[in-house]
Structure formats: structure tokens, C-alpha cells
Length: 528
Image (cartoon, rainbow, N blue to C red; front, side, top):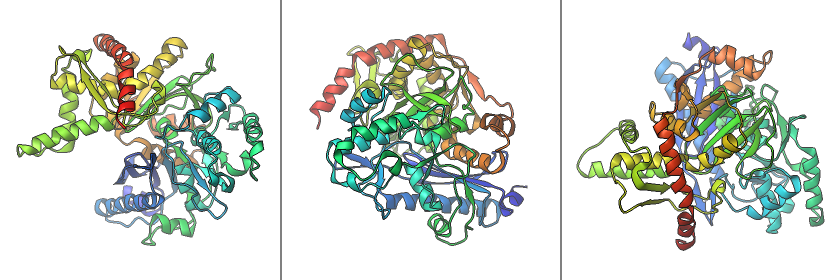
């Protein structure tokens, strides 16, 4: 059956450009993964700016697609030449500015950069709407405030998913979820907020630029809407071998927040999800507005345009991964080679034996700045009390807690201060790959049940494949109905209730975590 689905071009392809991996997933019309491919990459810190080169974007896309093709050939004995639909997703936010010739004006500024504080303070004041540092409008306005000469030449501004989609289809469009990380969305029109767009134009009128807001931002689309098709040039960009056919329809390009919602069936009101990998964010689909503006909470949207409260943190597992690599190196020193998955599972599971409050150990996982805790720079840091119990179990538990620390600080505002209701919180991403452990730590952080599905490790590539399948087959249903009826079919995943001792222990850890933030701030100031 799978062979027939692939050979007849019914399979659907999703590709997501994540922080450390570009992944391609091929699914059938019920959402079942048929094959996957990937490419490892890493951001670079160049001249103080976190970036990826566009050359590496295309190298990674081609390599991940080639890896997928090889898997299909090996697994099914057939060549992949056509698919029913394609979806492109990527890290949200950031700054990709092009001139009228389509040339990149300055290196890609990713979500990880925290250099737009002046801009966000002014924009938040003008709009009366929280504008995070990583949003595209913040980067644009900061470049204007800095009087960067390239700004006058901007003809098109987009995100990474919008850029790739543009090159594959020729269409300068963006899914509403990703667009909501560029500029505020009007909940009524489900498009960029035109009142605020006008305010922005007024704010920069004295600069004399030839463009206005609506001239340079992409056209916003909802899930299921037409977003163009693969051109001949686009087909060669993705598959230089020439085997992939042109003419394949694409769904609106989306950000990793939107694909996370799709992948966890969390697009309905009062549902929520947590995506945990290199960065971490939690989202709850709202049934009402917040009572005031919080700098720690972003208002974004689902892929079909419903309002979502989001806590986004720049740092999650990078520091944890570095410590595990160190422990792996230690084992190798004694001639022991352990499979990576086995090593992660054993070390994660050891954390369950640690003390609930981590026994006097404390860490900060800030590889970069963390706006939720008001830090513009990061320095990974581990510290302990003189009488702290330095065991492996406590050490691992500390780093798992730390990976969630900034997120918990933001979610406490949402759940404790605003009393926002949530009926279901789904977890996905690499943090949840080891059964139970990540789930239990997250349940302790939010004091709520956490569900994880078998597809938790598939992440956003699977999520954007689902949105592509919806574009191809699902327009007669709402996105929520399509996910409920066709993809998940009532599956709520494996649910884990919070352990009361864990909740109390995490709260005690967080008290130390918040009190110790000046240590992290001092480390950033002293270690240049």
C-alpha cells in the first residue's frame, strides 16, 4: 500500500528547518510517516550576530531531501519523483531583508539575537501590544534606529520559511502563524493589524523611505489556502538530480510554533502544547484576551488564525546536550562507546532518582540572552551550595529543571496571575523523546497533566506535512475537525499527571533560580 501511495504521488512531504536539524518527512494521507531524511547544522555567531548562511540553507535542504529519497529507495525499492503536496516550515521570527533584485541585504538575523531592546520598548508603547525582541518588526525598527544604510533598499521582508517558499514557488506569502511572529495579527481580519501598520508608517515617516509597511511584508494566508506550486526552478533547487516533478502544490509556509500546534492537535480553544528542543515555547489557544500587556507573553496565532498566548524562551537543551557530550567523552576515555540514544535515556532516567529540589544544585542554560528573564546575553553556568548533594541524579535533574526554568517563569504569569484555563497540554520535541522523564519534569513545572504522543519526536516536519495534507485534502473541514477526524482519530496520547513531590520540589528550585539571576547577569557582564 505504501509503495502505491508513493508511486502514484499521493504521499505528502513536510520539511522543517530547525535550529540544529533540517528534517524531511514523507507521510500518507492519514498522517502516517513513510520515510524521513535529515541534515545536521548549527548557527554561527558572526560579528556578535547569530546567523545561518543561505548557502547552507540550500545545502541542508538538498541533503535532507536526498537522504529522504535514499530512504524511500532503500525501504520501498522505488524512486521518489512526485508527491501530492509540500509544506515548508522553519524557525520563526528573525530578519531576512531583500532588495528589489532579490539579493539579501544583510546576513540573516535569527530568533536567537537579543539586540533590539530599544526598538521593542518604543513599539510596545506605540502599539500597546507586546513586541518581543526576536520579531521581524523589532529587527526592522532597530535597524532604522541604528541608521543602517541597507534599510532604504528593503523591497521584501520575510522569515526563513517564507524565504524558502518564495524560492520554490515564486510566491511572497506567509502562513498566519509565522506571520504573527513578524507583526501583530488582527484577530478579526486574521491579517496584519492595519491600525498598527499605519502607526508604524507614521513612526518612521521622517526617515523618507520610498516604501511603506504593506509594500515590504508578505501576503498572509490561512491554513488550507492556495499558496502556489513548485516551479521548475524550485524543483531543481530542492532536488538537483532533476527527478522531482514541478507543479506540486504547496501549503502556506509556517513557523515552528504553528507546526507544533498541528503536530500535537492543539489548535482548538483551551488546548495547549509545549515544544522543547534547542529553544522552548509553550502555547495556549485563548478564549479571551489577557487583562494587560506582559513582556514575557507573546500573542501569536494558530495556523488558521485563532489567538494564542505564547511563552517563548531562547534556551532549552543546548547546555544539557553539552554536559551529556562531556560525560560521553569521559566514558570514551576508558574505552567505553555507548550508543547516543542509550546514553541519553540512561542519564535522563537517572534524574528521576534525584532529590525533588535538586539538593542545592543550580544551573542556568543561557547560551544566548533570555528576554523572559530580562537577560540580553547568556553564559551557561552551574553553581552549587557548599553542602549541596553533588550526585549524578541531582546533577541531571538540575539541568532538566534548568531547561524549563525560564519557561516556568513565564507560564506562572499565564496560569497563576491570569488564571488562563487549559484542558490539554501536549508535549513534543526532543526533550520528550525519552519516555516519562521529560513529561514528568514538565508536569512538575506547570502543575498540570502532560500528554505525549508516539509522534512526539517527529516534531515540526511532521506538523508541516499535516498542514500540507490539509491543503491537499481537507478544505471541506476546519483544521481542528481535520486533525481530530483524519489524523488523530481520538488519540489523546499518553497522559502523565504531576507528582505532588515534584511540583513542590520544582517550586523550591525556582525560588533559588529566580534569586540567583543576578549571578547570571554578573557572569555576562564579567566574561566578555
